[in-house]
Length: 361
Image (cartoon, rainbow, N blue to C red; front, side, top):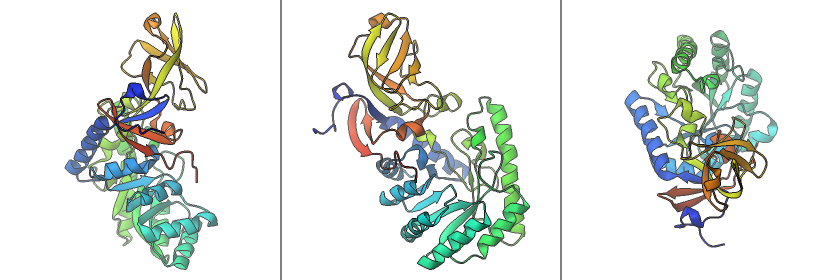
């Protein structure tokens, strides 16, 4: 297959997943500069990216710490040369313990816990393999998914970790995922600060019990500015800000949409046209995508291989015309593809495999 490097977009087959590198550069600079100004570490969430080449690209621009949602993503990060990784999730079961211990020997690795039994399993595995694993207590600050309640339960779990061989208590995670897309910024801020006080209050209780709490991490793209610089928080963990999507962009317009799907018009009717990319290429779990730079064209239906776009001026659209479609959910869209094209000023600069796409382990 001929190389796509240097090719203009019009020369590409479709559908193709595109990443605008100039927009990514601007998004990274905005977030990393803000982190420096506010004195917090920015730990980039890899669940939104899933691509080792993109992680290396971010590292070269100052983002050296990452977190992942799954063990396989952490392994891809380590293979890409990332050496400081948090798995922001519970790792359960004997099948994963071998992989976890092997990874802990390669990089500075941390996981989250919310159960004493899981702490015991991790401790046995790390002791057996002669390595040390960093552990954060996940605190439920309102998302009602994983985590222990703030306060005494978190203190007890931190104490249990601190006395467990092979483990190192590294701090707390409190993720406010339920607040990320709250439309009203004042409401989002008020609820975020309320949740933060529970998290930081738990930090104070653990320190009062004589246990240092070096890391307190949380937030996402929707709440980063409220959490960054909040007293007692040491780092934030946004991910979608790198690529963005048309839903997140409504609450965080300061970050540009770098991710799009290049598609081709394959059919035209008087009031609509049809593209050659559907739900197998564009995630629709958060809603309909948007057509880039075409405010009068509205995507109204995604089937497996087609997107229907309604448009009053559809008669001016021709079969073979190109469109870039911005998905409603960047994370899930990255998971649908096996490679992405890094483009700059309308030409392909790099091609990266998306190693963690389609994996759930």
